[in-house]
Amino acid sequence: MAIALPLLGALFFVYLFALAFGEATRRAGLPVLVGEILAGIVIANLAIGSFDLEGWIGLSSASAQGVVSRDALTGLADIGVIFLAFSVGLEVLPSAVRRFARPSALTAAFGTTVPFVLGFALIVLLKGPGAWAAALFVGVALTVTSLTVTARFLRDHGLLDTNEAHLILGASLIEDVVGAVLLTIVLAVTAETHHGPVDLVYQVALVLGGALVFVVVFFRVLPPILRRYADVRGPAPASSAARNTAFVLAILLCLGASALANSFQLASIVGALLAGMALAEFRDRYDLRVRFGALNTFLAPFFFASIGLLVSVGELLAVWPLAAAVTAVAVVGKVASIPAEAQHLGRRTAIRVSAGLVPRAEVGIIVALTAYGAGLITGDLYAALVVMSIATAVIGPILLYRAFRDAPSGPEGGPEPAGI
Image (cartoon, rainbow, N blue to C red; front, side, top):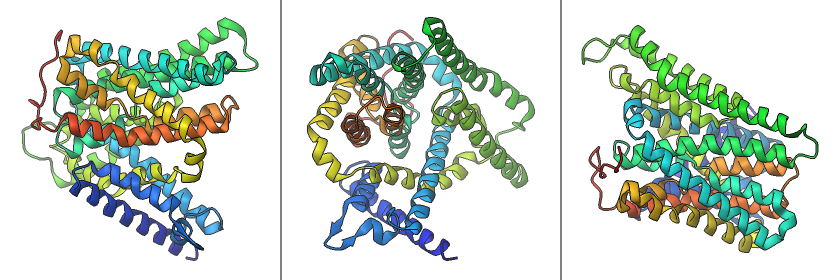
């Protein structure tokens, strides 16, 4: 009980701050998740004299109780982002994503190439040709996209059924697979000891092949199996017992798919998203949308607050020129793709889709942690990448809000891209 009480108090205050800041930003006309991230920043950095808000809440690592609370919060955040991705998948029918496969692939091609080249060039320009290894990791960190941040915005604003949403989700999936392959290549190339080109080709083929098998299983194989054995008779909701059983099985599928995605070197959220898509056509009959929506109401704020908790104002002041430059390139890298994307999407759709691909959030942080843990980037560059990941998680939804400001919700929220 000595541990439980401080832990529960810490969770209470973090959740309260996240809700309060989220409501404040909503009233200010900004996305709720921006306020939840700001809540984490305030908690981590507010200190007046001897008063330290993070320590008072119980999250500071200065005490054993603080360590327990921070670990528990991180665990809730990890679970929250998985269930959020699963809920997004529930809103997206695989047939709709397949319909947008070609424009999503073209969008992902521009959305990965341009940021990677700009990120690599920036670090070489600032730190010299000798920093080519670090420049490669920065390029990878700018290539990936956090679909959970954008998906939360789309869900909160009733835009998940729009053409742009399907394009964003499809392009995000492709970009994350490309990012996983690039990360594998860069790690192999920059390692002090590796076994030559044959070993490199083997590692890349393993990651790429595993990713493709994983996507095909959850995208094409699993849905027909579920349709065969699930009770889909009639439009009426299933019985209460059937809905409870389906909910438990959906949780197991979500967690299992997330763990399996990690084993294929993919982000766990990719597995959760695909698992949700596999169950999308059963969401109403088995009440899955409402049940997972209730879970997200509780868990999602912890995830976005935990992003803000990673921001240290002191470290930010020390590296702000580098962090600002990396963040600017991260945003410009997506926006610069608009003219090329507009040729097959239309200008308005291209602007909205590019804005949806701006956030890096937890995916960018994962790349930064991997590179820093391997000793391949310096501390200042690691801090700059973390700041970039968090800043784009705030900038992306704001750009999306402005881009969608005049759009109606629902499937007619955007024009049909050309070439479909």
